[in-house]
Amino acid sequence: MSTTICQVMGFIVSSLGVAGCMVSTAMDMWSTQDLYDNPVTAVFQYQGLWRSCVRQSSGFTECRPYFTILGLPAMFQAVRALMIVGIVLGILGLFVCIFALKCIRIGNMEDSAKANMTLTSGIMFIVAGLCAITGVSVFANMLVTNFWMSTTNMYQGMQNVQNRYTFGSALFVGWVAGGLALVGGIMMCLACRGMVPEESRYKAVSYNASGRNISYRTGPYKVGSGYEPETKTRKGPGYEEAPRSEDGGRSYPSKYDYV
Image (cartoon, rainbow, N blue to C red; front, side):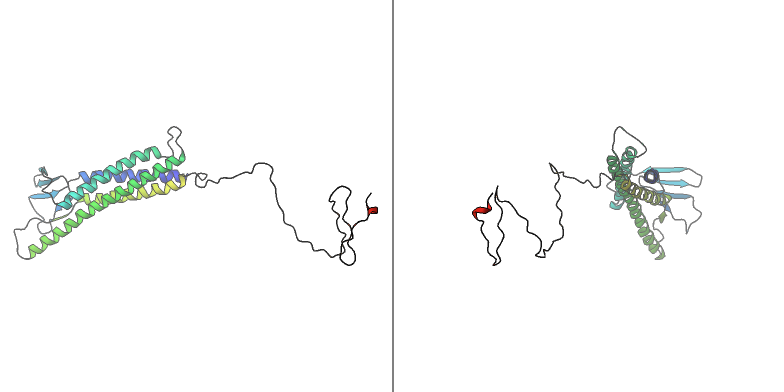
């Protein structure tokens, strides 16, 4: 029961993480204009991964997509690629996880096959979460670098510098979504351990000898005292072993000893 609950909870948490990654990628507020020095402004600018927007004080918003790919910075394109890879892996992991749920029976699928599918989906969710966290962190690092460079130029007396940008709401959504996908993938991997049947973990092979079984027993060694009568063994019909003489030699039977 605990395995099923862990698997279902991992599926739900991972679904929320993948949905959050998609929302974060589509949002336009990855970077917003810093209004620290100018709180009252007629124009507010913010940018996303796919377009930049300008919102006027009247409430009118105009967005313009990026018409070029080669003209964008390399790190910016890397962030795009990481987010797209994370979304694709997350969607594939959701499809695999749906068929791997223990509460859903599809044909005669064995528990070992479901365990392998659960592990595969868990690994996909973990990689998707790492891609999302890495992409958001790289973009945040770019913002921090540009912010402090703009601040330095401003204090040096350059008034014609471009506007400073700070963290947007999409970054926080991406961090939370990546963390949820990562936690959900770990839960799926933990659920995989409880789904593997015990008889399939260790398969013992027994060999049975043909014919009847012969058992050998070892008993204690009995030391003779020298006074026990010797057992007579027949070498053939009508023949008995002759007793030994007093001098240690063997006395051979005479003709009167045969019957």
